[in-house]
Image (cartoon, rainbow, N blue to C red; front, side):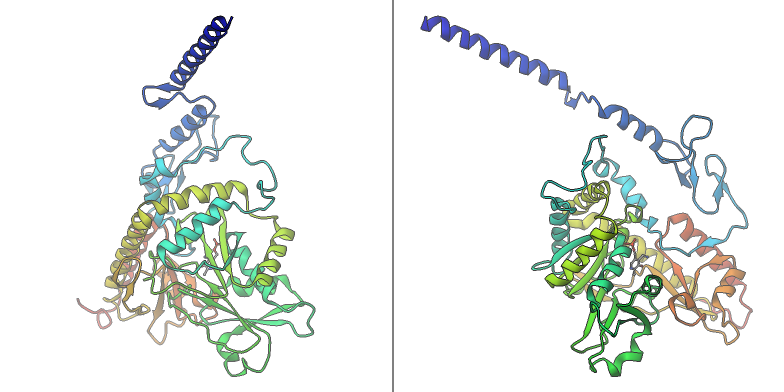
Length: 458
Ligand code: PMP
Protein backbone atom coordinates (compact mmCIF):
# COMPACT_ATOMS: atom_id res chain seq x y z
CA UNK A 1 0.00 0.00 0.00
CA UNK A 2 2.83 2.35 1.00
CA UNK A 3 4.57 1.52 -2.27
CA UNK A 4 1.48 2.50 -4.34
CA UNK A 5 1.23 5.79 -2.37
CA UNK A 6 4.86 6.68 -2.98
CA UNK A 7 4.73 5.93 -6.75
CA UNK A 8 1.58 8.12 -6.96
CA UNK A 9 3.54 10.89 -5.24
CA UNK A 10 6.49 10.52 -7.66
CA UNK A 11 4.07 10.56 -10.62
CA UNK A 12 2.45 13.79 -9.40
CA UNK A 13 5.80 15.44 -8.80
CA UNK A 14 7.14 14.50 -12.25
CA UNK A 15 3.93 15.62 -14.03
CA UNK A 16 3.98 18.91 -12.17
CA UNK A 17 7.63 19.44 -13.14
CA UNK A 18 6.85 18.70 -16.81
CA UNK A 19 3.86 21.05 -16.78
CA UNK A 20 5.95 23.80 -15.22
CA UNK A 21 8.67 23.32 -17.78
CA UNK A 22 6.11 23.49 -20.63
CA UNK A 23 4.59 26.70 -19.29
CA UNK A 24 8.01 28.29 -18.74
CA UNK A 25 8.97 27.30 -22.28
CA UNK A 26 5.74 28.90 -23.55
CA UNK A 27 6.61 32.14 -21.79
CA UNK A 28 10.11 32.23 -23.22
CA UNK A 29 11.06 32.14 -26.85
CA UNK A 30 14.81 31.93 -26.86
CA UNK A 31 15.71 34.48 -24.19
CA UNK A 32 12.64 36.67 -24.82
CA UNK A 33 9.38 36.65 -22.95
CA UNK A 34 6.51 35.54 -25.08
CA UNK A 35 4.45 38.59 -24.13
CA UNK A 36 0.67 38.39 -23.98
CA UNK A 37 -1.39 41.51 -23.16
CA UNK A 38 1.50 43.96 -23.42
CA UNK A 39 2.73 43.16 -26.95
CA UNK A 40 -0.01 45.14 -28.71
CA UNK A 41 0.70 48.24 -26.63
CA UNK A 42 4.43 47.87 -27.18
CA UNK A 43 3.91 47.55 -30.93
CA UNK A 44 1.68 50.65 -30.97
CA UNK A 45 4.24 52.67 -29.02
CA UNK A 46 7.10 51.65 -31.28
CA UNK A 47 5.07 52.25 -34.46
CA UNK A 48 4.33 55.84 -33.42
CA UNK A 49 7.92 56.39 -32.24
CA UNK A 50 9.15 55.31 -35.67
CA UNK A 51 7.15 57.97 -37.55
CA UNK A 52 9.72 60.22 -39.15
CA UNK A 53 9.16 63.92 -38.57
CA UNK A 54 12.48 64.86 -40.21
CA UNK A 55 14.08 65.45 -36.83
CA UNK A 56 12.04 68.67 -36.51
CA UNK A 57 8.97 67.30 -34.79
CA UNK A 58 7.51 64.29 -33.09
CA UNK A 59 4.45 62.04 -33.33
CA UNK A 60 2.80 60.99 -30.07
CA UNK A 61 0.52 58.11 -29.09
CA UNK A 62 -2.21 60.61 -28.19
CA UNK A 63 -1.60 62.90 -31.18
CA UNK A 64 -4.35 63.96 -33.55
CA UNK A 65 -5.24 61.29 -36.09
CA UNK A 66 -6.23 62.43 -39.56
CA UNK A 67 -7.95 60.02 -41.97
CA UNK A 68 -8.08 57.23 -39.37
CA UNK A 69 -4.43 56.32 -39.78
CA UNK A 70 -1.48 57.28 -37.61
CA UNK A 71 -1.08 60.36 -35.41
CA UNK A 72 0.27 63.37 -37.31
CA UNK A 73 3.71 64.92 -36.76
CA UNK A 74 3.71 67.83 -34.29
CA UNK A 75 6.36 70.19 -35.66
CA UNK A 76 8.86 72.31 -33.73
CA UNK A 77 8.41 76.07 -34.02
CA UNK A 78 9.64 77.31 -37.43
CA UNK A 79 9.01 73.94 -39.14
CA UNK A 80 5.91 72.71 -40.94
CA UNK A 81 4.59 70.22 -43.49
CA UNK A 82 3.33 66.67 -42.96
CA UNK A 83 6.82 65.51 -41.97
CA UNK A 84 8.01 68.85 -40.51
CA UNK A 85 10.68 69.19 -43.20
CA UNK A 86 9.72 72.73 -44.33
CA UNK A 87 11.61 75.54 -42.66
CA UNK A 88 9.41 78.64 -42.35
CA UNK A 89 11.62 81.41 -43.73
CA UNK A 90 10.53 84.46 -41.68
CA UNK A 91 9.71 82.66 -38.50
CA UNK A 92 10.57 84.29 -35.16
CA UNK A 93 13.04 82.48 -32.90
CA UNK A 94 11.14 81.22 -29.89
CA UNK A 95 13.19 81.93 -26.75
CA UNK A 96 10.17 82.61 -24.61
CA UNK A 97 8.85 79.79 -22.42
CA UNK A 98 10.83 77.46 -20.16
CA UNK A 99 9.94 74.18 -21.87
CA UNK A 100 12.92 71.97 -20.94
CA UNK A 101 13.18 70.02 -24.21
CA UNK A 102 16.98 70.26 -24.20
CA UNK A 103 16.85 66.87 -22.43
CA UNK A 104 14.73 65.17 -25.09
CA UNK A 105 17.79 63.66 -26.90
CA UNK A 106 18.90 62.06 -23.63
CA UNK A 107 15.57 60.26 -23.31
CA UNK A 108 15.66 59.23 -26.98
CA UNK A 109 19.07 57.67 -26.31
CA UNK A 110 17.63 55.95 -23.24
CA UNK A 111 14.32 54.93 -24.79
CA UNK A 112 14.53 51.28 -23.68
CA UNK A 113 15.42 51.84 -20.04
CA UNK A 114 12.95 54.71 -19.54
CA UNK A 115 9.85 53.18 -21.19
CA UNK A 116 6.94 52.02 -19.06
CA UNK A 117 3.87 50.05 -20.05
CA UNK A 118 0.75 50.62 -17.97
CA UNK A 119 -2.03 48.02 -17.81
CA UNK A 120 -5.67 49.14 -17.86
CA UNK A 121 -6.09 47.95 -14.28
CA UNK A 122 -2.96 49.61 -12.90
CA UNK A 123 -3.50 51.48 -9.57
CA UNK A 124 -7.11 52.48 -10.07
CA UNK A 125 -7.54 53.28 -6.41
CA UNK A 126 -7.50 56.75 -4.82
CA UNK A 127 -4.75 55.61 -2.49
CA UNK A 128 -1.80 53.27 -2.12
CA UNK A 129 -1.97 50.19 0.12
CA UNK A 130 -0.78 52.24 3.11
CA UNK A 131 -3.73 54.61 2.47
CA UNK A 132 -1.35 57.44 1.52
CA UNK A 133 -1.34 59.30 -1.80
CA UNK A 134 2.44 59.11 -2.12
CA UNK A 135 4.40 56.24 -3.65
CA UNK A 136 6.85 55.07 -0.99
CA UNK A 137 9.18 53.81 -3.70
CA UNK A 138 9.24 57.21 -5.40
CA UNK A 139 9.85 58.92 -2.08
CA UNK A 140 12.75 56.55 -1.35
CA UNK A 141 14.25 57.16 -4.80
CA UNK A 142 13.95 60.95 -4.46
CA UNK A 143 15.78 60.85 -1.13
CA UNK A 144 18.47 58.69 -2.77
CA UNK A 145 18.70 61.12 -5.70
CA UNK A 146 19.39 64.08 -3.37
CA UNK A 147 22.00 62.04 -1.51
CA UNK A 148 23.74 61.12 -4.80
CA UNK A 149 23.63 64.66 -6.24
CA UNK A 150 24.40 66.26 -2.88
CA UNK A 151 21.99 69.15 -3.50
CA UNK A 152 19.66 68.82 -0.50
CA UNK A 153 19.48 67.42 2.99
CA UNK A 154 16.62 64.94 3.27
CA UNK A 155 17.30 63.45 6.71
CA UNK A 156 14.61 64.40 9.23
CA UNK A 157 12.59 66.01 6.45
CA UNK A 158 9.00 65.23 5.50
CA UNK A 159 8.28 64.93 1.81
CA UNK A 160 5.13 65.87 -0.07
CA UNK A 161 4.36 65.69 -3.79
CA UNK A 162 2.53 68.29 -5.85
CA UNK A 163 1.14 68.68 -9.37
CA UNK A 164 4.41 70.30 -10.44
CA UNK A 165 6.12 72.64 -8.02
CA UNK A 166 3.51 75.23 -9.06
CA UNK A 167 0.94 73.63 -6.76
CA UNK A 168 3.44 73.37 -3.92
CA UNK A 169 4.38 77.06 -4.07
CA UNK A 170 0.94 78.12 -2.91
CA UNK A 171 0.57 75.15 -0.56
CA UNK A 172 3.73 76.41 1.16
CA UNK A 173 2.49 80.02 1.32
CA UNK A 174 -0.73 78.75 2.90
CA UNK A 175 1.13 76.53 5.39
CA UNK A 176 3.48 79.31 6.50
CA UNK A 177 0.78 81.97 6.89
CA UNK A 178 -0.83 82.61 10.25
CA UNK A 179 -4.24 81.04 10.69
CA UNK A 180 -7.03 83.52 11.52
CA UNK A 181 -4.63 86.36 12.25
CA UNK A 182 -5.73 89.99 11.96
CA UNK A 183 -2.58 90.68 9.95
CA UNK A 184 -2.04 88.56 6.84
CA UNK A 185 1.48 87.35 6.01
CA UNK A 186 3.38 89.55 3.57
CA UNK A 187 4.78 87.49 0.71
CA UNK A 188 7.93 88.91 -0.92
CA UNK A 189 10.58 87.97 -3.49
CA UNK A 190 13.80 89.56 -4.73
CA UNK A 191 13.57 91.38 -8.10
CA UNK A 192 13.96 89.99 -10.73
CA UNK A 193 11.68 87.14 -9.64
CA UNK A 194 9.64 84.33 -11.16
CA UNK A 195 6.23 85.97 -11.83
CA UNK A 196 4.12 83.03 -10.63
CA UNK A 197 4.89 83.87 -6.97
CA UNK A 198 3.00 87.13 -7.28
CA UNK A 199 0.34 85.96 -9.71
CA UNK A 200 -0.63 82.98 -7.57
CA UNK A 201 -0.63 84.91 -4.31
CA UNK A 202 -2.76 87.70 -5.83
CA UNK A 203 -5.07 85.24 -7.54
CA UNK A 204 -6.06 83.38 -4.37
CA UNK A 205 -7.00 86.64 -2.59
CA UNK A 206 -6.62 85.02 0.80
CA UNK A 207 -7.24 86.76 4.11
CA UNK A 208 -4.12 84.96 5.39
CA UNK A 209 -1.51 86.23 2.90
CA UNK A 210 -0.87 89.03 0.41
CA UNK A 211 1.91 89.79 -2.06
CA UNK A 212 4.02 92.77 -1.03
CA UNK A 213 6.67 93.03 -3.76
CA UNK A 214 10.43 93.26 -3.53
CA UNK A 215 12.20 91.73 -0.53
CA UNK A 216 14.58 94.67 -0.17
CA UNK A 217 11.71 96.99 0.86
CA UNK A 218 11.33 94.90 4.03
CA UNK A 219 14.99 94.49 4.89
CA UNK A 220 15.00 97.00 7.70
CA UNK A 221 11.63 96.09 9.09
CA UNK A 222 12.06 92.33 9.12
CA UNK A 223 12.82 92.07 12.82
CA UNK A 224 9.83 94.10 13.92
CA UNK A 225 7.69 91.02 14.35
CA UNK A 226 5.74 91.23 11.07
CA UNK A 227 4.76 87.95 9.42
CA UNK A 228 6.86 87.75 6.28
CA UNK A 229 7.21 84.92 3.77
CA UNK A 230 10.24 85.28 1.54
CA UNK A 231 10.63 83.36 -1.70
CA UNK A 232 14.31 82.53 -2.22
CA UNK A 233 14.96 81.20 -5.71
CA UNK A 234 18.34 79.50 -6.08
CA UNK A 235 19.42 79.43 -8.84
CA UNK A 236 17.19 82.34 -9.74
CA UNK A 237 14.83 82.47 -12.69
CA UNK A 238 15.58 84.65 -14.73
CA UNK A 239 19.24 85.54 -13.95
CA UNK A 240 20.70 82.24 -12.62
CA UNK A 241 22.01 83.83 -9.39
CA UNK A 242 22.25 81.68 -6.26
CA UNK A 243 19.98 83.90 -4.17
CA UNK A 244 20.20 83.74 -0.38
CA UNK A 245 17.67 84.65 2.27
CA UNK A 246 17.66 88.39 2.91
CA UNK A 247 15.20 88.79 5.78
CA UNK A 248 15.63 87.76 9.39
CA UNK A 249 13.38 87.82 12.39
CA UNK A 250 11.21 85.66 14.58
CA UNK A 251 8.24 85.81 12.18
CA UNK A 252 10.13 85.51 8.90
CA UNK A 253 9.82 82.26 6.97
CA UNK A 254 11.51 81.28 3.74
CA UNK A 255 10.34 79.15 0.83
CA UNK A 256 13.39 77.95 -1.08
CA UNK A 257 12.58 77.31 -4.73
CA UNK A 258 15.33 74.99 -5.98
CA UNK A 259 13.76 74.14 -9.35
CA UNK A 260 17.15 74.74 -11.04
CA UNK A 261 19.48 73.40 -8.34
CA UNK A 262 20.75 70.54 -10.50
CA UNK A 263 24.18 70.01 -12.08
CA UNK A 264 22.83 70.90 -15.55
CA UNK A 265 22.44 74.53 -14.54
CA UNK A 266 24.78 75.31 -11.67
CA UNK A 267 27.69 73.87 -9.69
CA UNK A 268 26.43 72.02 -6.61
CA UNK A 269 28.32 73.77 -3.82
CA UNK A 270 26.59 72.27 -0.76
CA UNK A 271 23.42 70.42 0.17
CA UNK A 272 20.58 72.93 0.59
CA UNK A 273 19.00 72.69 4.02
CA UNK A 274 16.19 75.24 4.18
CA UNK A 275 13.10 74.54 6.28
CA UNK A 276 10.86 74.43 3.19
CA UNK A 277 12.55 73.46 -0.09
CA UNK A 278 10.77 72.91 -3.38
CA UNK A 279 12.05 70.84 -6.32
CA UNK A 280 10.53 69.71 -9.60
CA UNK A 281 10.89 66.92 -12.11
CA UNK A 282 10.30 69.53 -14.85
CA UNK A 283 13.84 70.95 -14.77
CA UNK A 284 15.61 67.82 -13.51
CA UNK A 285 14.56 65.18 -16.07
CA UNK A 286 12.81 67.68 -18.39
CA UNK A 287 9.35 66.07 -17.96
CA UNK A 288 7.40 69.26 -17.36
CA UNK A 289 4.26 67.60 -18.73
CA UNK A 290 4.21 64.95 -16.00
CA UNK A 291 3.49 67.70 -13.44
CA UNK A 292 5.43 66.31 -10.55
CA UNK A 293 7.18 68.40 -7.92
CA UNK A 294 8.13 67.75 -4.32
CA UNK A 295 8.76 69.69 -1.16
CA UNK A 296 11.17 68.78 1.64
CA UNK A 297 9.83 70.12 4.89
CA UNK A 298 11.46 70.30 8.30
CA UNK A 299 8.60 71.11 10.64
CA UNK A 300 5.75 68.71 11.17
CA UNK A 301 3.04 71.36 11.51
CA UNK A 302 4.05 72.92 8.14
CA UNK A 303 3.99 69.45 6.58
CA UNK A 304 0.52 68.81 8.07
CA UNK A 305 -0.85 72.10 6.71
CA UNK A 306 0.62 71.47 3.24
CA UNK A 307 -0.86 67.96 3.33
CA UNK A 308 -4.30 69.37 4.19
CA UNK A 309 -3.99 71.84 1.30
CA UNK A 310 -3.15 69.01 -1.11
CA UNK A 311 -5.99 66.81 0.10
CA UNK A 312 -8.60 69.56 -0.36
CA UNK A 313 -7.08 70.62 -3.66
CA UNK A 314 -6.28 67.53 -5.74
CA UNK A 315 -6.07 64.56 -3.34
CA UNK A 316 -2.47 64.06 -4.33
CA UNK A 317 -0.61 63.67 -7.58
CA UNK A 318 -1.74 61.32 -10.36
CA UNK A 319 -0.55 57.78 -9.59
CA UNK A 320 0.34 57.45 -13.29
CA UNK A 321 2.68 60.45 -13.01
CA UNK A 322 4.24 58.98 -9.89
CA UNK A 323 4.88 55.69 -11.70
CA UNK A 324 6.48 57.53 -14.61
CA UNK A 325 8.57 59.69 -12.28
CA UNK A 326 9.79 56.58 -10.47
CA UNK A 327 11.01 55.05 -13.72
CA UNK A 328 12.72 58.27 -14.78
CA UNK A 329 14.46 58.73 -11.42
CA UNK A 330 15.62 55.09 -11.59
CA UNK A 331 17.24 55.84 -14.96
CA UNK A 332 18.80 59.05 -13.57
CA UNK A 333 20.27 57.01 -10.72
CA UNK A 334 21.93 54.49 -13.04
CA UNK A 335 25.65 55.29 -12.81
CA UNK A 336 24.82 57.60 -9.92
CA UNK A 337 23.42 60.32 -12.17
CA UNK A 338 26.59 60.68 -14.21
CA UNK A 339 25.02 60.27 -17.62
CA UNK A 340 22.07 62.64 -17.46
CA UNK A 341 23.87 65.40 -15.58
CA UNK A 342 26.93 65.16 -17.83
CA UNK A 343 24.61 65.39 -20.85
CA UNK A 344 22.61 68.26 -19.34
CA UNK A 345 25.68 70.22 -18.26
CA UNK A 346 27.46 69.77 -21.62
CA UNK A 347 24.38 70.93 -23.53
CA UNK A 348 23.77 73.97 -21.33
CA UNK A 349 27.46 74.89 -21.20
CA UNK A 350 27.89 74.73 -24.97
CA UNK A 351 24.76 76.84 -25.49
CA UNK A 352 26.05 79.46 -23.03
CA UNK A 353 29.46 79.54 -24.73
CA UNK A 354 27.92 80.01 -28.17
CA UNK A 355 25.58 82.73 -26.95
CA UNK A 356 28.34 84.54 -25.02
CA UNK A 357 30.56 84.52 -28.10
CA UNK A 358 27.90 86.17 -30.25
CA UNK A 359 26.97 88.73 -27.59
CA UNK A 360 30.64 89.62 -27.09
CA UNK A 361 30.59 90.98 -30.66
CA UNK A 362 27.89 93.48 -29.74
CA UNK A 363 28.01 96.85 -28.05
CA UNK A 364 24.26 96.90 -27.88
CA UNK A 365 23.65 93.82 -25.71
CA UNK A 366 25.23 92.30 -22.63
CA UNK A 367 24.67 89.16 -20.56
CA UNK A 368 24.63 88.52 -16.82
CA UNK A 369 27.93 87.37 -15.35
CA UNK A 370 28.11 84.13 -13.43
CA UNK A 371 31.38 83.05 -11.80
CA UNK A 372 32.85 79.55 -12.07
CA UNK A 373 32.59 77.50 -8.92
CA UNK A 374 33.59 74.13 -7.56
CA UNK A 375 30.93 71.50 -8.12
CA UNK A 376 30.81 68.76 -5.48
CA UNK A 377 28.87 66.53 -7.85
CA UNK A 378 31.40 66.60 -10.70
CA UNK A 379 34.37 67.12 -8.33
CA UNK A 380 35.71 69.97 -10.42
CA UNK A 381 35.36 73.67 -11.05
CA UNK A 382 32.52 74.31 -13.45
CA UNK A 383 31.91 77.51 -15.39
CA UNK A 384 28.43 78.95 -15.98
CA UNK A 385 25.70 76.91 -17.68
CA UNK A 386 22.49 78.80 -16.79
CA UNK A 387 18.97 77.95 -17.89
CA UNK A 388 18.24 81.50 -19.08
CA UNK A 389 20.10 84.47 -20.48
CA UNK A 390 19.20 87.72 -18.74
CA UNK A 391 20.01 89.98 -21.66
CA UNK A 392 20.42 93.73 -21.20
CA UNK A 393 20.06 96.39 -23.89
CA UNK A 394 22.92 98.83 -23.24
CA UNK A 395 22.02 101.72 -25.54
CA UNK A 396 20.28 104.66 -23.89
CA UNK A 397 17.53 104.63 -26.52
CA UNK A 398 16.85 100.86 -26.24
CA UNK A 399 14.62 101.11 -23.17
CA UNK A 400 12.28 98.44 -24.49
CA UNK A 401 14.68 95.59 -25.11
CA UNK A 402 11.86 93.17 -25.86
CA UNK A 403 10.81 95.32 -28.85
CA UNK A 404 14.44 95.64 -29.97
CA UNK A 405 14.67 91.86 -30.12
CA UNK A 406 11.28 91.56 -31.78
CA UNK A 407 12.68 93.82 -34.48
CA UNK A 408 15.29 91.12 -35.03
CA UNK A 409 12.62 88.39 -35.10
CA UNK A 410 13.38 87.06 -31.63
CA UNK A 411 10.67 86.37 -29.08
CA UNK A 412 11.98 86.63 -25.53
CA UNK A 413 10.19 87.53 -22.27
CA UNK A 414 9.99 91.12 -21.08
CA UNK A 415 11.98 92.21 -18.01
CA UNK A 416 8.82 93.76 -16.56
CA UNK A 417 7.28 90.28 -16.33
CA UNK A 418 9.96 89.63 -13.67
CA UNK A 419 9.22 93.01 -12.01
CA UNK A 420 12.48 94.37 -13.48
CA UNK A 421 13.19 97.05 -16.12
CA UNK A 422 12.21 96.43 -19.72
CA UNK A 423 15.86 97.09 -20.53
CA UNK A 424 16.16 93.39 -19.73
CA UNK A 425 14.78 90.41 -21.61
CA UNK A 426 14.91 86.78 -20.59
CA UNK A 427 15.95 84.33 -23.30
CA UNK A 428 15.24 80.68 -22.65
CA UNK A 429 18.20 78.37 -23.28
CA UNK A 430 16.50 75.14 -22.22
CA UNK A 431 14.23 74.66 -25.19
CA UNK A 432 14.78 72.16 -28.02
CA UNK A 433 17.83 72.37 -30.29
CA UNK A 434 15.87 73.84 -33.24
CA UNK A 435 14.73 76.78 -31.11
CA UNK A 436 18.22 77.42 -29.81
CA UNK A 437 19.75 77.23 -33.30
CA UNK A 438 17.16 79.70 -34.60
CA UNK A 439 17.92 82.04 -31.69
CA UNK A 440 21.63 82.05 -32.57
CA UNK A 441 20.86 82.63 -36.24
CA UNK A 442 18.59 85.61 -35.55
CA UNK A 443 20.94 87.11 -32.94
CA UNK A 444 23.88 86.77 -35.29
CA UNK A 445 21.99 88.69 -37.95
CA UNK A 446 20.79 91.37 -35.54
CA UNK A 447 24.26 91.95 -34.15
CA UNK A 448 25.96 91.94 -37.52
CA UNK A 449 23.60 94.76 -38.52
CA UNK A 450 24.70 97.01 -35.63
CA UNK A 451 26.11 100.18 -37.12
CA UNK A 452 29.83 100.25 -37.81
CA UNK A 453 30.75 102.19 -34.67
CA UNK A 454 28.94 99.86 -32.36
CA UNK A 455 30.00 96.61 -33.92
CA UNK A 456 32.99 95.22 -32.09
CA UNK A 457 35.49 93.14 -33.96
CA UNK A 458 36.71 89.87 -32.49
N1 PMP B 1 9.85 77.65 -9.93
C1 PMP B 1 10.59 78.19 -10.89
C2 PMP B 1 11.69 79.12 -10.49
C3 PMP B 1 10.33 77.93 -12.23
O1 PMP B 1 11.06 78.50 -13.19
C4 PMP B 1 9.28 77.04 -12.56
C5 PMP B 1 8.95 76.67 -14.00
N2 PMP B 1 9.28 77.51 -14.96
C6 PMP B 1 8.52 76.51 -11.52
C7 PMP B 1 8.83 76.81 -10.22
C8 PMP B 1 7.32 75.63 -11.79
O2 PMP B 1 7.64 74.44 -12.37
P1 PMP B 1 6.67 73.16 -12.37
O3 PMP B 1 5.31 73.58 -11.93
O4 PMP B 1 6.73 72.64 -13.75
O5 PMP B 1 7.28 72.22 -11.39
